[in-house]
Image (cartoon, rainbow, N blue to C red; front, top):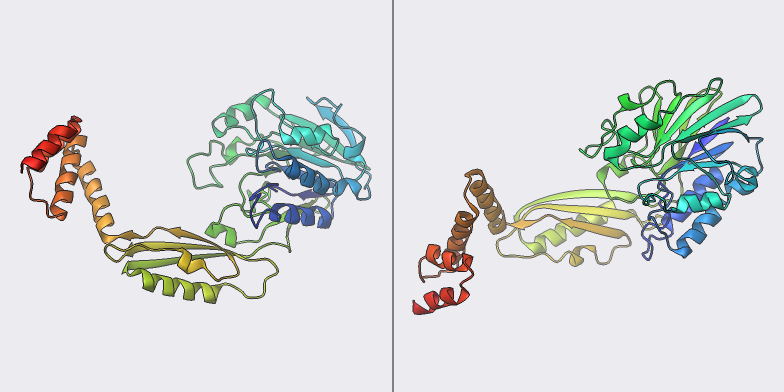
Length: 397
């Protein structure tokens, strides 16, 4: 059997912007082009818990694509811990779709999320701590799914569910969580060692960079659309995977109709704004391609410092380019950087809040060439809320 894995489609992402069609266009291509007997959707099908009706309408049209394709003889053989009522005629008339919901769709206990709605409409089979067995001829595939749960609860939920592999079938476990081995964050509670034993493959959504771990036993499915302009997103195009159970291969297929992402970083040291604008525009001109079907995405990160007392207007940088440019302005002035260092030093020296406040006030008054009363006395009045007393002290001098 051939099994397509199409994850994190994020229908509705960037709705109301120039990018609102990206999630739909790219998922539609994956569902049309994937040569498969079964389609798996490992969560975050939608970008929000309660998508607009317009988004739901477009998503349902796209998710009808596999159901309208010629069937390949896959049938539902068994369900485990699952009511079979929603698994009706339409979910198995073409290419069956099996899904879990992700963190973007998760709602409170007892509340229906949009993936529940799709299942009720007969468009897919939704799993949460449930399993189903599919069969094509003599081949059996057992699909076990745990939808996205809060990270801190994930180890407990997985342990309590304790899925058991089905004998005589290829067993695939679907999740939508962070794993310590796959993310650079403290938010992950699960590790690959937490995976239950006896499964042929674990498929995880949620993390948008596609990758295969643990000698092809753990598939990080990635996403079909860019939602975060990170450098890591430039390493591989968006796409989907197809697992061939006959030879146990997993192949990646890039989506053709997608925007190119360009990630740029520039460093400056006490540079005047005019010079930064000139150099940044020159960098963009040499980096942005001129013959792209879709406007490219550009992330420009500016780091370092501006010349003393200056400010940068980033609109002067992005205007005039045929691209969707996002500028991350991390530039500071030397004065601001010195103040930050001063605050850090005061924190390291264990100064009290009052001491730090008085020190800062004293420095600011000195910088303004203030020759009035003692800063410590003035701060004490301000700290006590005695604004009138502070005014009298200043005016007396």
